[in-house]
Length: 366
Image (cartoon, rainbow, N blue to C red; front, top):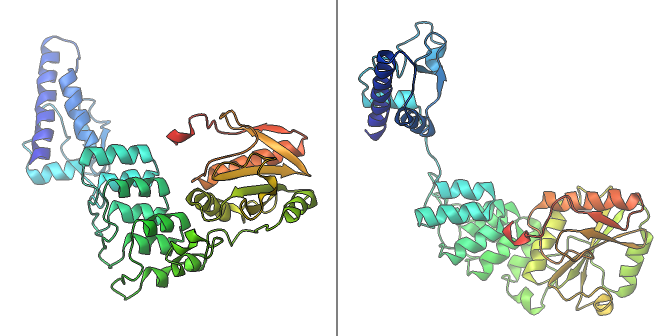
């Protein structure tokens, strides 16, 4: 009914403007008329200017209709029924809430705006999926943590009985799984097919699930998050890895294997290792197990990534003031690939310092 009123109001307003323009012998469209039509368009209407009349708009279906049905918003607007209004506006069927759409964009800022606007953090999509489930499926760890902080229900189930932990495990997102486990997600909760998160998990998540994601923090299996990447256990092994590579960039991740920040970075590095294998190789080093380089490279951050080429440390200007290393965790695989490619191209040209393709001086906004 509201849509019908808007359409009719737009038509009547335009008709009044046209009468005024005719009496004054010059064409003019009022701001009110423009805004009303614009509002209709924003609501989802698909209109095109009719070649047969410069004063009206027709729907796409009418443009190609041989009978050329009456033009919408013409001088003598028709009295529209609710069915006519719906036909003109052609609104798509909404399957997700705006909060879901914001999460799909991958932007934490947009998600925060949507959540603050609509308030409800556990709003359901047509498939009975919560925003937390979608964030878990897509692996947006920062959004996942934000939703949990806003009180999202970690035990909520969709129409198939799956929880957010099911979604994260099935998609293979290690850090998202870790966040949900530390938030108290239930490993033993089956879906409608009697499958637990452990049953649907990708193989590289098995160790994490077997330790319930918590024992690993106490050192039972600190490599559970990084075992898919080559793990260097001695200072000699680190030196050999750096010196033995002649044509590829050596990407060295220093940190604590069980640290959440390192887990997030390891997931990104693991995801790109195959894509960059022709020009880069990735290694991980636990600085508690191998403390040899802690003083030399000032390894005081939870996670540090450094680059080497032909036994030479390659620095990169990220806009942060520290050109020696990356000391935060990425959550964007493409950005990491772009950085490694930049290091590789610059190093091959003999450059000891390269410029990052993206300025991270305001990295906390990303």
